[in-house]
Image 1 (tube, rainbow, N blue to C red):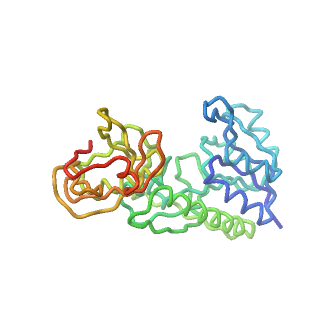
Image 2 (cartoon, rainbow, N blue to C red):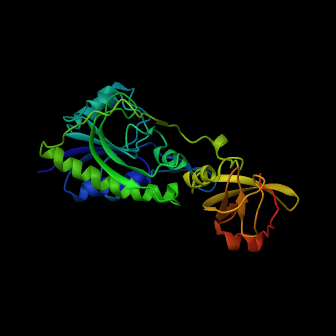
Length: 311
């Protein structure tokens, strides 16, 4: 026995789930992903999404609608006669016609412990808020924003220095296994659904460029969480005068440190920076157009003495 599945996803985060469902013997009758976008060094080449590329390697049919407003697009979806839709970071809103376009509806793999961090950036927001744990939830989708009943939960601890990139990679694999398990339970008609609690709702808004600059006038723990929550992309940053002109420097990793001083002031020659209270040590940095470097390597090219102000 196997399920007829429509898979819907776009980034690398979605790929392990697709592959695991194929390996489990399910029939993927179609893969939906976002259309190719301009990319390449000059932005002139149309590049297929990671899910698109993976689906083609697996020999699966791929559809890339801009949206589902066209009645013909909705009809094509229904005509696939699928048992279930599996959605992992697809990136398009699904109308009710699609949510109800399969026998058992659509199930979403969401990277948070709902109802905390509904929305676009749950991984980054969990770290930026200093959460000690998060997880992957398999949820039956409804017309609300991540409001559907939960079918399966897998918790993941967030280490004190874990970055968003590291948590992304961990949840990517945990989520794939959780969805594969949920589909086994669904096939056996043994997948209970639990409504989300009404209390504890938080929304994970998309990361805005305006919030990526480091504010050393915050507490050290807040600065540290900000840095790791935005690493490696888009990256938290400060400005430093290099060669007589201000230059943006990204901080890709940090750790809490001891020390007191004026906010933004280097307290040591190894990149310990004072915050409103406490201090952080910057351990991995990247100048504009440069490669990510460990702090010692960065300082060899850009020596910074104690007393330097970062802004």
